[in-house]
Image (cartoon, rainbow, N blue to C red; front, side):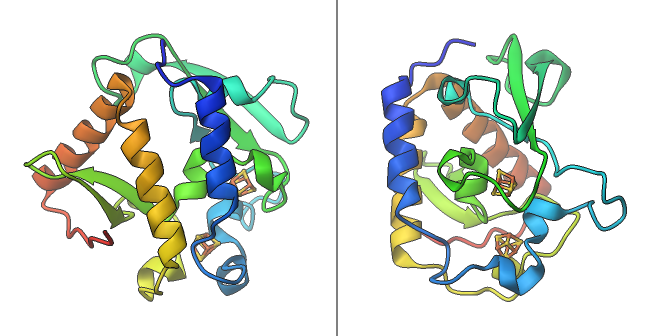
Length: 188
Ligand code: SF4
Ligand code: SF4
């Protein structure tokens, strides 16, 4: 898939998000890093849940990272926007919750926030509405997130949605949420 976001921009985005954290401590201590290790309790040989990379994000990896398993799937086979055609890259970390922190993908960096576009096409940030196979205390206990994390995440999404493919994804997810009548908790 053709991404309009350059590798250097993705690098700058990673650097910006390296400087912030959802809370001022390691929130993995609250839950045993549930978002990284989900599934491992039942089967210690299991790796973490698969994470898809945004279009072009794969430019930041060389595919030989020892801590990652890669798969590619066709976007048409999944519930991605119609404009998404061709390969989507999925990764799974082999040693969760341990990973090279500076290389963790965007989806790990944004959690528990998601972008949402209102009917007026305004970008907002909301708490994750995707059904999860684990409990995230940041969501269930509505723990206050750091303003720097919220602001950096918002800044990044403002940039990301200038890419037509990523914009289409956010539109689709936003429309699906509204259609499902999900209880949106706006953060910004
Ligand atoms: S983001 Fe939520 S689930 Fe993941 S480590 Fe932090 S508190 Fe736990
Ligand atoms: S890449 Fe790192 S932060 Fe993301 S799920 Fe794997 S271990 Fe957790």
